[in-house]
Image (cartoon, rainbow, N blue to C red; front, side, top):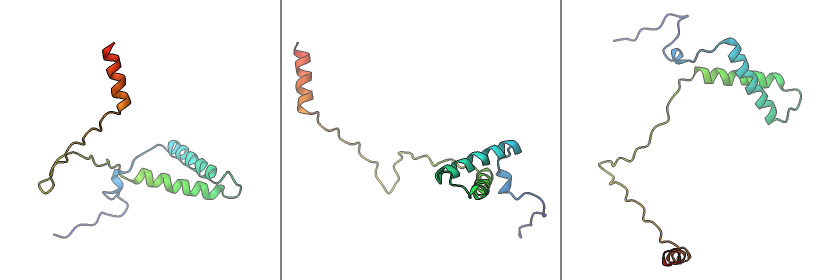
Length: 106
């Protein structure tokens, strides 16, 4: 079956996952991002507009991107790979053993 196109002017399924924030909050986020960009260039004059525009692009990308959880690594043995053996503990240092023996002897 052929896939129907969404009518123009409606949000695509990917855009529906975008985070919605108030315009004031978005502007605050852009201002903070622009500040950090200016700080990275030691606040040299002349690039303030570029800092702001790049910060807007960055914030829009963050708000539009769906949040993905990091994959959880689990210690499950796969059929092709045996479970890992627990690591052997290293023997205690001789000085530590001697100190423990002295404490128990007293």
